[in-house]
Amino acid sequence: KGKRAFIAGVADDNGYGWAIAKSLAAAGAEILVGTWVPALNIFESSLRRGKFDESRKLQDGSLMEIAKVYPLDAVYDNPEDVPEDVKANKRYAGATNWTVQEVAESVKKDFGTIDILVHSLANGPEVSKPLSETSRKGYLAALSASSYSYISLLKHFLPIMNQDGSAISLTYIASERIIPGYGGGMSSAKAALESDTRVLAFEAGRKKRIRVNTISAGPLGSRAAKAIGFIDMMIDYSFTNAPLQKELHAEEVGNTAAFLSSPLASAITGSVIYVDNGLNAMGVGV
Ligand code: NAI
Image (cartoon, rainbow, N blue to C red; front, side, top):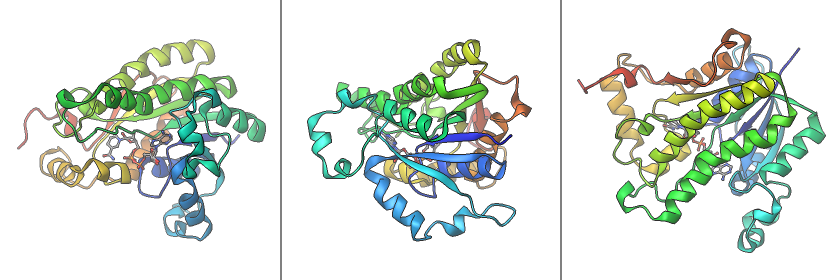
């Protein structure tokens, strides 16, 4: 029986979310995505106009189908949370039902259940500021968009997740090692995400035998990463210093997500899985 996946955080064909969608589609899953509201129009029109057709191609030559694109802003749990200025914002006015609770309700109405939940989103408005210069507001915003958003998604989707399902998020080694430049509380947000992965694995495991894991991915020149500003340097650093001196392909992260969501990984939960050409294992740069 085919599985159904909801992937939050897909707004173009460059990021990890897109690659995970492709690997899951190649493995036979039905794909639903959640797209950040301000990015929705351009993503949907690009899809419609065939701009992503080349990157929709799967190994067997067929094109990945996205069964439905849902507008989503994972910073808001329900309509009562949405401030007036956001409601009135032109980039939000055209879309409806995009809070986490409403998206889960819409998916339930449209499809009934899902088997796989993927969180591939992060945002830290002060990411370019060192942690010691980060404002309280910026720090909490990073945690809200990058960590609590996962708790909220799991909380609202758990009731419609089938037994033995899988939940996956994306993390970064800045949670446990010093990566200057990954500021604004983003390192803290990833540390929270990894800790929450363990606690959520326990809670979702006991409730529905759902497995909860996070992939600690190496550097990729996605839209979000380019906004941070040091991604080319991190890619070069990895190429020079990692045990495997090769480019890291988003597909390699996608394939790991597909493995973790499959019965092949039926005893893996609460884990941080590194997909980084082994860079995490190095103690010094060489
Ligand atoms: P991306 O730009 O493809 O994905 C981030 C997505 O988050 C975007 O589509 C953006 O629209 C969405 N987003 C931001 N705020 C949102 C909100 N409030 N509600 C809903 N969606 C929102 O970039 P990337 O790099 O593929 O990021 C995916 C995940 O991978 C993130 O968790 C990131 O921290 C993680 N990661 C990325 C690495 C990299 O080098 N690119 C390395 C390790 C982890």
